[in-house]
Image 1 (cartoon, rainbow, N blue to C red):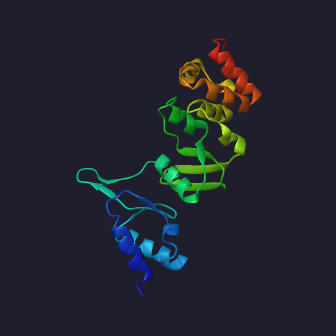
Image 2 (image 1 turned 90 degrees about the horizontal axis):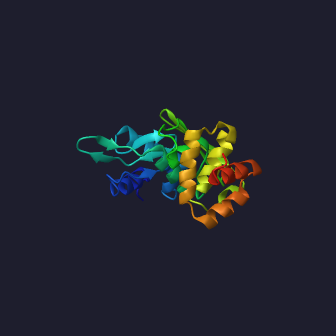
Image 3 (image 1 turned 60 degrees about the vertical axis):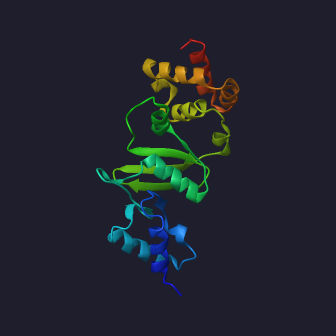
Length: 202
């Protein structure tokens, strides 16, 4: 019978240069948890895969000029959510960055999730999964859902005229039915602010 280490190495070599994120759970059925972790640790030391966080490995995609191409924190967060079969939604500064309201990439990316709380360290960046109620995930708008999550964290009182103008532009692009639906799920304070903003009363 083939060893756990050899089985894992063959599977990884078949996906070489894919840039794919892999986790120990991907190899369950190949051996014990300890044997799987030992095999991945060895392959990491040998440079076959790259460890980018606790229990998170990358099958490197290499560029002749730039070397290993590393995934961004958002890609890592989405891969973890897919692996754990949970939903995530950007919140606070993370939502603001995704909406283009700020160019500054937050050092701590916060996502609402319908799964358990989790925190992942990627170099200087932290990814946090924060459990939320099903109501948060009932929102439908491409923009309004993220705007409401961002304001939930930031606070209406901290939105200056610069951000207000950008938020209004995004809301004007939103599907009207989706916006109306999402406003019903927002807090009274956020609903009132966004309605006034849309109607040029802010």
